Image (cartoon, rainbow, N blue to C red; front, top):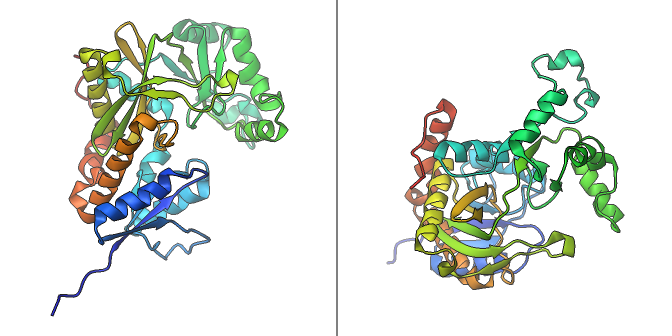
Length: 357
């Protein structure tokens, strides 16, 4: 008599508008799982707090755009579902933290300043008495910020994805116009009133902004980090003003040369390991032979089959392999391997090993 076969593990994929990659991932995981895994699109509704979700693992690709999912995923993790990316991590990380960590690791990164909320005294139930710890910026203080960052610079939300609310500013006058008024009240997206209103609603006066140095780059790299593996792409960012949505990826290691290519790989490995990330992308603006880490907070990586065509099959295989291992071997889960050490370093201010050569 054959022993009773255990029930398959269940993977739920939480997706947004994308098609192609989620469906391919279901097929790839079930193929690699060899009958031990059932993969499907997750189904979530108005869920009671005491009820676990029927998934052993949820791969989340949309909660950054829909906060209700984010709330539910943290509770699911508390009930024992393994969630990728870690929903407690994604709730805590932001671009300013990223800049601080890059500095601590010795990885070149743009000069970055976090800004007081525009219109702070217009917030509900906030008065000058509420903000007695806040140093108000006079002309001299603003001048020091501008001298430190320089122009042109990037004004952007501290926690956001894509290009929503990101503005290149070329002067103090342009900065103040957007920071104080236009970002909230003026038309930002022409010929699309609905999208324009959505942006201005989202960019309410509780949005924390950063001002970041512009790096005039000569080469650009976008790198995937997937379950400990690194892929380095030659990348051309989209020209947003020309209506381009996706950048151009090329598999061209020779474009960087052996030393720079290996340096990029090492930086990506180190920053993702220290931060406890599992599936993520990092972007480098390269000036001369100096790579500047300008962004590494991209949990919802670009896995569009058309835009990343030279890398799509490899990315799909790596994501499927990592999720399969997480389901079949809990010891393979990077959250368990990295998280306590990573946040212990951050919370106690301990210096991390330098990433410089």
